Image: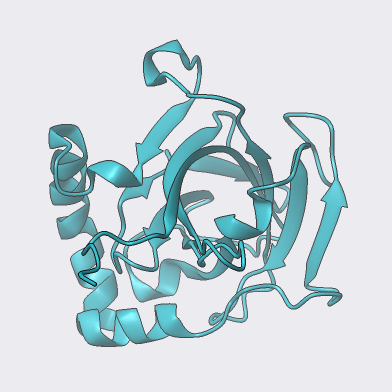
Length: 218
Protein backbone atom coordinates (compact mmCIF):
# COMPACT_ATOMS: atom_id res chain seq x y z
CA UNK A 1 0.00 0.00 0.00
CA UNK A 2 1.29 3.45 -0.90
CA UNK A 3 2.83 5.29 2.05
CA UNK A 4 2.57 9.02 2.44
CA UNK A 5 5.83 10.92 1.97
CA UNK A 6 5.02 12.90 5.08
CA UNK A 7 6.92 11.97 8.21
CA UNK A 8 5.04 10.67 11.25
CA UNK A 9 7.47 12.50 13.49
CA UNK A 10 5.84 15.18 15.60
CA UNK A 11 7.29 18.67 15.45
CA UNK A 12 6.98 20.73 18.61
CA UNK A 13 7.53 24.47 18.71
CA UNK A 14 9.09 25.62 21.97
CA UNK A 15 10.41 28.94 23.25
CA UNK A 16 13.11 29.12 25.91
CA UNK A 17 14.19 32.10 27.98
CA UNK A 18 17.95 32.24 28.54
CA UNK A 19 19.88 34.36 31.03
CA UNK A 20 23.68 34.42 30.92
CA UNK A 21 26.48 35.10 33.39
CA UNK A 22 30.20 34.31 33.14
CA UNK A 23 32.41 33.90 36.20
CA UNK A 24 36.12 33.26 36.78
CA UNK A 25 36.85 35.42 33.74
CA UNK A 26 40.63 36.01 33.39
CA UNK A 27 42.18 39.44 32.98
CA UNK A 28 41.48 40.77 29.49
CA UNK A 29 42.89 43.63 27.45
CA UNK A 30 39.30 44.47 26.55
CA UNK A 31 37.25 43.98 29.75
CA UNK A 32 34.01 43.10 27.98
CA UNK A 33 32.53 39.92 26.51
CA UNK A 34 30.22 38.89 23.69
CA UNK A 35 28.26 35.63 23.40
CA UNK A 36 27.50 34.20 19.96
CA UNK A 37 24.71 31.64 19.54
CA UNK A 38 25.50 28.87 17.05
CA UNK A 39 22.87 26.18 16.35
CA UNK A 40 24.70 22.94 15.57
CA UNK A 41 22.47 22.19 12.58
CA UNK A 42 23.27 25.60 11.08
CA UNK A 43 27.00 25.73 11.82
CA UNK A 44 27.32 29.50 12.01
CA UNK A 45 26.36 32.37 14.29
CA UNK A 46 22.69 33.30 14.09
CA UNK A 47 22.58 35.72 17.01
CA UNK A 48 24.92 37.76 19.21
CA UNK A 49 24.31 39.18 22.64
CA UNK A 50 25.34 42.75 23.25
CA UNK A 51 28.78 43.36 24.73
CA UNK A 52 28.78 43.26 28.54
CA UNK A 53 31.43 44.61 30.90
CA UNK A 54 33.60 42.39 33.10
CA UNK A 55 33.98 43.42 36.74
CA UNK A 56 36.05 41.44 39.24
CA UNK A 57 36.01 38.39 36.98
CA UNK A 58 32.22 38.42 36.56
CA UNK A 59 30.28 39.34 33.43
CA UNK A 60 26.47 39.51 33.44
CA UNK A 61 24.06 40.15 30.58
CA UNK A 62 21.04 42.03 31.91
CA UNK A 63 18.66 41.27 29.06
CA UNK A 64 17.41 37.71 28.58
CA UNK A 65 17.36 35.98 25.21
CA UNK A 66 14.25 34.18 23.96
CA UNK A 67 15.03 31.33 21.57
CA UNK A 68 12.27 29.57 19.63
CA UNK A 69 13.17 26.13 18.28
CA UNK A 70 11.44 23.20 16.59
CA UNK A 71 11.83 19.94 18.48
CA UNK A 72 11.16 16.63 16.73
CA UNK A 73 9.59 13.77 18.69
CA UNK A 74 9.64 10.13 17.63
CA UNK A 75 6.05 8.82 17.61
CA UNK A 76 6.83 5.37 18.99
CA UNK A 77 9.47 6.05 21.61
CA UNK A 78 8.43 9.60 22.47
CA UNK A 79 12.11 10.59 22.44
CA UNK A 80 13.08 14.06 21.28
CA UNK A 81 15.83 14.61 18.74
CA UNK A 82 18.81 16.67 19.86
CA UNK A 83 18.58 20.43 19.42
CA UNK A 84 22.04 21.62 20.38
CA UNK A 85 23.13 25.25 20.61
CA UNK A 86 26.74 26.31 21.13
CA UNK A 87 27.58 29.49 23.05
CA UNK A 88 30.89 31.03 21.98
CA UNK A 89 32.33 33.51 24.48
CA UNK A 90 34.90 36.06 23.33
CA UNK A 91 36.14 39.57 23.95
CA UNK A 92 36.56 40.23 20.23
CA UNK A 93 36.88 38.61 16.82
CA UNK A 94 40.56 37.64 17.08
CA UNK A 95 41.89 34.32 18.33
CA UNK A 96 43.43 35.98 21.39
CA UNK A 97 39.99 37.15 22.48
CA UNK A 98 38.43 33.67 22.34
CA UNK A 99 37.59 32.40 25.85
CA UNK A 100 35.94 29.15 24.80
CA UNK A 101 32.51 27.69 24.27
CA UNK A 102 29.81 25.65 25.97
CA UNK A 103 26.75 23.82 24.68
CA UNK A 104 23.26 22.81 25.71
CA UNK A 105 20.64 20.52 24.21
CA UNK A 106 17.21 22.16 24.37
CA UNK A 107 15.60 18.72 24.21
CA UNK A 108 16.87 18.12 27.76
CA UNK A 109 14.79 21.04 29.04
CA UNK A 110 11.57 20.56 27.05
CA UNK A 111 9.67 19.01 29.97
CA UNK A 112 11.11 21.09 32.80
CA UNK A 113 8.34 23.04 34.59
CA UNK A 114 10.74 25.36 36.42
CA UNK A 115 13.82 27.38 35.46
CA UNK A 116 17.11 25.52 35.69
CA UNK A 117 20.62 26.92 35.93
CA UNK A 118 23.48 24.99 34.36
CA UNK A 119 27.11 25.90 35.06
CA UNK A 120 29.37 25.04 32.13
CA UNK A 121 33.15 25.35 32.14
CA UNK A 122 34.23 26.79 28.80
CA UNK A 123 36.02 24.35 26.51
CA UNK A 124 38.80 24.55 23.91
CA UNK A 125 40.69 27.58 25.27
CA UNK A 126 41.83 26.80 28.85
CA UNK A 127 40.56 30.18 30.03
CA UNK A 128 39.11 28.73 33.23
CA UNK A 129 35.92 30.74 32.78
CA UNK A 130 32.51 29.29 33.64
CA UNK A 131 29.29 30.15 31.80
CA UNK A 132 26.09 29.99 33.85
CA UNK A 133 22.90 29.69 31.81
CA UNK A 134 19.46 29.92 33.38
CA UNK A 135 16.98 28.16 31.10
CA UNK A 136 13.21 28.50 31.35
CA UNK A 137 10.73 26.92 28.95
CA UNK A 138 7.98 29.43 28.24
CA UNK A 139 4.39 28.25 28.39
CA UNK A 140 2.13 28.76 25.37
CA UNK A 141 2.87 30.83 22.29
CA UNK A 142 5.25 33.75 22.74
CA UNK A 143 4.63 36.99 20.85
CA UNK A 144 7.98 38.78 20.31
CA UNK A 145 6.21 42.16 20.38
CA UNK A 146 5.17 41.50 23.98
CA UNK A 147 8.68 40.78 25.24
CA UNK A 148 10.17 43.63 27.25
CA UNK A 149 13.90 44.10 27.81
CA UNK A 150 14.61 40.88 25.95
CA UNK A 151 16.17 39.70 22.70
CA UNK A 152 14.33 37.27 20.42
CA UNK A 153 15.88 34.60 18.18
CA UNK A 154 13.76 32.23 16.09
CA UNK A 155 15.33 29.26 14.33
CA UNK A 156 12.29 28.92 12.06
CA UNK A 157 13.35 32.03 10.17
CA UNK A 158 16.96 31.25 9.24
CA UNK A 159 16.21 31.62 5.53
CA UNK A 160 13.02 33.67 5.57
CA UNK A 161 13.41 36.37 8.19
CA UNK A 162 14.79 39.55 6.65
CA UNK A 163 16.05 41.04 9.89
CA UNK A 164 17.95 37.87 10.79
CA UNK A 165 19.55 37.73 7.34
CA UNK A 166 20.72 41.31 7.87
CA UNK A 167 22.14 40.33 11.26
CA UNK A 168 24.01 37.39 9.73
CA UNK A 169 25.45 39.68 7.07
CA UNK A 170 26.66 42.15 9.70
CA UNK A 171 28.19 39.38 11.77
CA UNK A 172 30.03 37.69 8.89
CA UNK A 173 32.70 40.37 8.56
CA UNK A 174 33.34 40.44 12.30
CA UNK A 175 33.78 36.66 12.43
CA UNK A 176 35.96 36.36 9.34
CA UNK A 177 39.22 37.13 11.14
CA UNK A 178 38.38 34.77 14.02
CA UNK A 179 37.47 31.88 11.72
CA UNK A 180 40.60 32.45 9.66
CA UNK A 181 42.72 32.33 12.80
CA UNK A 182 41.32 28.92 13.75
CA UNK A 183 41.65 27.45 10.29
CA UNK A 184 38.63 28.62 8.31
CA UNK A 185 35.04 27.41 8.20
CA UNK A 186 35.87 23.70 7.96
CA UNK A 187 37.92 23.80 11.18
CA UNK A 188 35.28 25.94 12.87
CA UNK A 189 32.53 23.41 12.12
CA UNK A 190 34.81 20.58 13.19
CA UNK A 191 35.24 22.23 16.58
CA UNK A 192 31.48 22.59 16.92
CA UNK A 193 31.01 18.86 16.37
CA UNK A 194 33.19 18.07 19.38
CA UNK A 195 31.37 17.31 22.58
CA UNK A 196 31.24 20.36 24.82
CA UNK A 197 28.08 19.25 26.58
CA UNK A 198 28.40 18.93 30.36
CA UNK A 199 28.82 15.28 31.45
CA UNK A 200 26.08 14.17 33.79
CA UNK A 201 27.24 14.22 37.39
CA UNK A 202 30.48 16.03 36.61
CA UNK A 203 31.70 19.06 38.51
CA UNK A 204 32.00 21.07 35.30
CA UNK A 205 28.34 20.54 34.47
CA UNK A 206 26.26 21.34 37.54
CA UNK A 207 22.50 21.68 37.21
CA UNK A 208 20.52 23.35 39.97
CA UNK A 209 16.84 24.09 40.46
CA UNK A 210 16.08 27.79 40.39
CA UNK A 211 12.70 29.47 40.70
CA UNK A 212 14.03 32.95 39.96
CA UNK A 213 14.30 34.48 36.49
CA UNK A 214 17.62 36.07 37.37
CA UNK A 215 20.36 34.58 39.49
CA UNK A 216 23.63 36.02 40.73
CA UNK A 217 26.24 33.31 41.15
CA UNK A 218 29.28 33.94 43.31
